[in-house]
Image 1 (cartoon, rainbow, N blue to C red):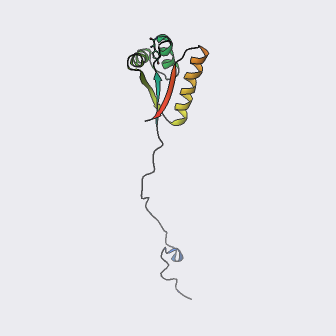
Image 2: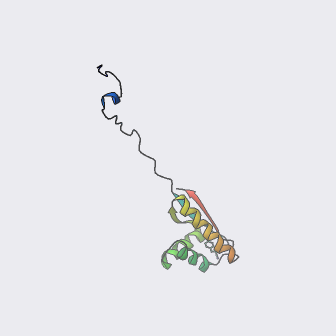
Image 3: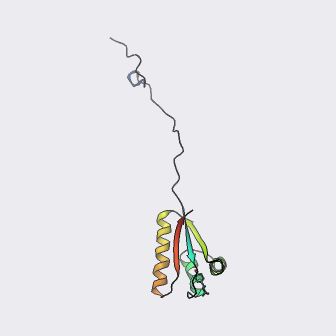
Amino acid sequence: MTERKDQGDKIGSYELAVEEARTQVKQPPLYRVLLLNDDYTPMEFVVDILESVFGMERMRATQVMLEVHTKGKGVCGVFNFGIAETKVAQVKAIAQRHQHPLLCTMEES
Ligand code: TYC
């Protein structure tokens, strides 16, 4: 019987070939959902959206709405791609139904 020598990965001699992972697995990207200011959407409507779509308390929702109103845009939250996309679509649908020009977008954070 011949001996199985020098096989490199040693599979022939029944040793396990184990290699350490060289790099860290990348985390999936996150996305900021933003509201944009306009001159026509009522403040109360924006506060309602921040409460119903983004789960904010009334006080926090009012702060974010005022930030958007004074600075032009503001962050409603940070989510994975699917959740961010869904929230943007929900805001657009509600705004459209009420005929307000409110704009909502997302960007990688
Ligand atoms: N600027 C609007 C107004 O004066 C209020 C507003 C706030 C509109 C935030 C949009 O994302 C917005 N009625």
